Amino acid sequence: MPTAPTRVRYLIVLVAMLAAVLLYLERVCVSVAEVYIREDLRIGKMEMDAAFGAFFIAYALAQVPSGWLSQRYGPRAMMTLYMIGWSVFGVFIALAQDFWTLFAARFLLGLSQAGAYPTAALMVKRWVPDRSRGLASGVVAFGGRFGGAGANWLTGILIVAFVPFSTPATITQADVLNSTLFGVHALDSTPGPLSSVRGAIRERLIESDPTSDQMAGMAVSGGPLRMFAMSPEQIAVAANDQVRAPWSMGEGATDGVQLANDGRAIRKKPPGERTEQESERLSRLVIEKAFPGAIRQLHVEGWRPTLFLYGLLGILVGGLFWVIARDWPRNHPWANAGEVALIESGQSQTSQQAGTDAIPWRELIASRNQWMFSANNFFANVGWVFLISLMPRFLDERFHVPVDQRGLMTTVPLFLASFGLIAGGWYTDRISRTLGKRWGRAIPMGAFRIPCAVALALTPWLPSAWAVVAALTVMSICQDFGIPAVWAFAQDTGGRQAGAVLGWGNMWGNFGAGIAILLTGTVAERLGWDAAMLTIAGAFALCSLTGILTNAAEPLFRDEVASPGERPA
Figure: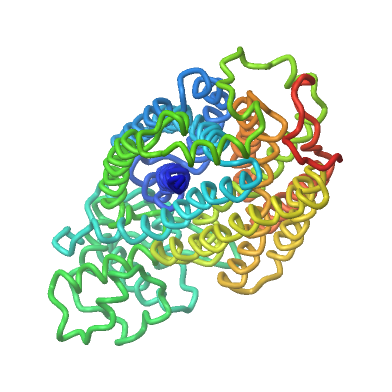
């Protein structure tokens, strides 16, 4: 009696998905930590955007070569090398001391992560029958989105958790980032929960220099605002008086101030039940909210250990991948002959070839179809990269959302979109069997990106942070619904060079991501976030058009044919 086929192929897809989880965990965590990195390294937004962009430019440049290397030397060895590499460079980010070390670490992270998805696509191509390729690709991509969603949520929690209550809450001179900006906030008498905090510190600053009338006599209207210049030492003394002393405002006056989890937990306690350290921590957190950008935040201390932890985790998963994965089903000691026969009988001949030829630059450059594929990736990433890079900054600047809530809000679109990947994989396989691969891939890559443009175009008129998150969730789900079709397009058209083709598309996609971070950040800085969101909406409209124009039934190499049973386009 024949032995039933083993199910090692499912384990291979699972471990590839786990690699994708770590890929995005390491990639995305920096966006939530961004404000703390900037304060710790004392760099500006444009420098931070350049560091963000460095990752995507390096990622783009290495896409095709790294995909080819996986075909040449095998996906098992190369994926393990890539995983350990990006984990080590993630630790390098945690060790950064200035802009240039941060820039270099992000660039190296991009180089080491570039081969991950082309390698995973190659492994899926070798281990999964052609009829299930879209679904398997969706499962692997699901891991990436799940990791990205988890990175935002987990990073926000860990950054706060890694700053224990024993950490001194007092403000040092080194914590004063901008004396002039501190003065601007001190002069702000706008009514609100934080006005009493600013007022109390303003009075202490005046008392510290009673001969100066620059504050007491300054004119807010009817003439230019006269600013006073206080030293970091004076600012630290006045602020620490507020940290240590009972508040001058009444109990509950700061209930409207949005605080991270540690601050919210302390505020729930009656004042008489708070320890001295808790009271000082709460005072410090409120002062930081009253003087944004002028005082180094206490939670800055948490971003480095968080990134260290992710790096160590990635090294462990890299070792696990090496133990479980093999380049071919026939080489795996756990896969029996029945499973090998099941896999190979359901694949085209090119799926079983090693594909060690040189990178097909000539064919890629000469193919209009591949250029449409590349443009689709370019414009999709212009829109999508906002979620994993600038969305936390947007929520902070537009809605003043605290770090752990920013982590949660940026998690929601990525987490729910991950299920769109599974649905998109099932859908592209299903309609490809009825409409053919031409439309079975083009519809998810094109038509399903139209709602992305609409959702983004509506965000300037939405009144709350959660309403914007809902719109971005619609965008993210529709965007990710098309991702399995993108992978399948590369596998369908690439044949023996599927890794190189996916690398080619990803290369242009990540050039789009690198450009988009700088473009979106600049537009937001000069014209506001509404203009930035409309710019992203326009990119998705172009993404939809280019997706419709792709043809997955057109192989890159003329000597290769479509899979058996493929309906003509």
